[in-house]
Length: 330
View 1 (tube, rainbow, N blue to C red):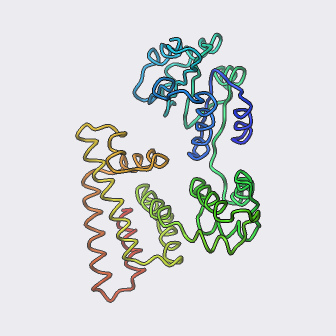
View 2 (cartoon, rainbow, N blue to C red):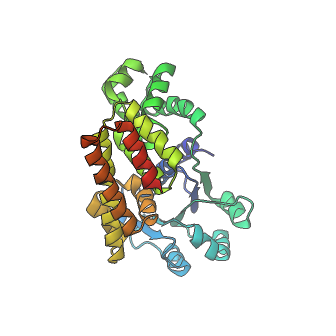
View 3 (cartoon, helix red, strand yellow):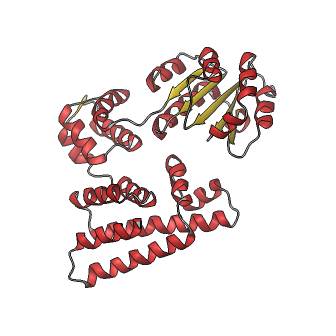
């Protein structure tokens, strides 16, 4: 099953006692979860019908008590969501197997995890009574086909040259590709086919995406990938001052998040204070975990140093930025 087949089932009003969404493509997980919420919650107040847990922080007893507790209001279906559920599944595997033999009739369990072994007894039970959906990142060669298929969700066609230009400009972030397709569909009005001129007029290069990719590559200490993203930004006309400014902005956010978490604040409150887009929150906090406060302070000093050099040194600007990336990854 893929995301589009799941949406078709949801649109037909199909319901299941359990859904498992697993893999490394956050956009597909987000789409699957949105379709499930829309179908199961309908017009019900989420504060009543939706119960959310983090699998690293919750016990199995609490989750199963919620599933077995009948909703107070008549006609309300309860949706119990466990995110980052890998550890939760491992610890509660036998209880989950037992639960799925006689699941609650008015409660639905959604598990979101990175890995899911289809060979297990639990996976067999899930497939028997519910839905398991792999949300896997697309290979680069698969992106054009996905773009053309996804454009039809907005009742538009996109020709091959426009598809390639969109992928070249935006890259493989499906969430951003989706937003551009949505904007293009509105921009075109009654015109049915997206062409190159439309992409040139409306899309361009998505700078927020590239700076996030750059900081993520740096956080992973992946020099090769970081340099590739940097060169892509420069080749698309991004100026050095803005690259440094965007990097500094992101480093400051990571630094502030690290401080707040060390003071005992939770991720939800930190995300709210720093205005982290929900779709990127998980990846943002993964970056935070890779750094110490000392690392972030040092990186901020490197950025300031490079900023001064780009304005005062006779060295080639691209070389200065490449040296900066090497040092940030060190």
